[in-house]
Image (cartoon, rainbow, N blue to C red; front, side, top):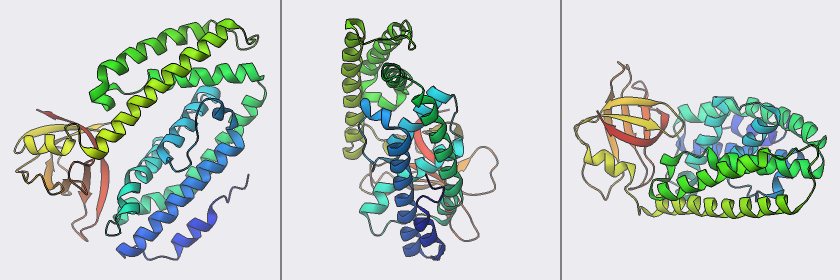
Length: 318
């Protein structure tokens, strides 16, 4: 596979002025296409075995990245660097806002981060994909199947239960079942495995478990889109004037003084906050529409530009 895969999209970005909001939108869409193409081609070339149990939708950047990196970590014991997780995270988080709203832009800071990271991200993905393919090719069909089933169960077992608040009890039950099936699967020797009734029963149970897990994921997506759960933005409004700790989807946390937050629920959240870590830069919590995900941004007082610190996962009063 060419290490210049998707290079035409990066060349398009080089010709744009990132000081212009309109051209930053165009640049972001080129980086989005770049990431989509690279992930699709790498999966098609090196991760064909994943298609045995995992459907492939090229437009789902974050889901495809998570599927591929889980496979890499499981088979060749290599963990994706956090900066590459962040690259795909920012691409995925910004996608709906920018694709569906022509007035929505992306600040210069986060966009520059995407542009700078893109070539290294591609090189890492292609390199690890080749290593994965070489390793998996040495396995027989049955061994590949067992390896993939192990990856599927691990995805369920390691899911963050706080990400699925409305289905917390159901997810806990699924994770318990996944751990029991992992134990049964661990008793199978991949080197000598054959298709037999026990393996067929395991495959059936794991596939059923996966469908139930995907139902929880879909339900969570619907909740986030239509506001049928209590959004983070509303928790922030309820805690107006409080000192709180916010936890980020990407990991880590920060203590903030919320100050007075607007209680106008018909408008997007956009409120200045004060970090408790003596930061020299002003910060704000904002989203683009009411009830949508909330991001903490650091504002550069020199030009008013902003950089995303992270997406807020939870809010706790101190």
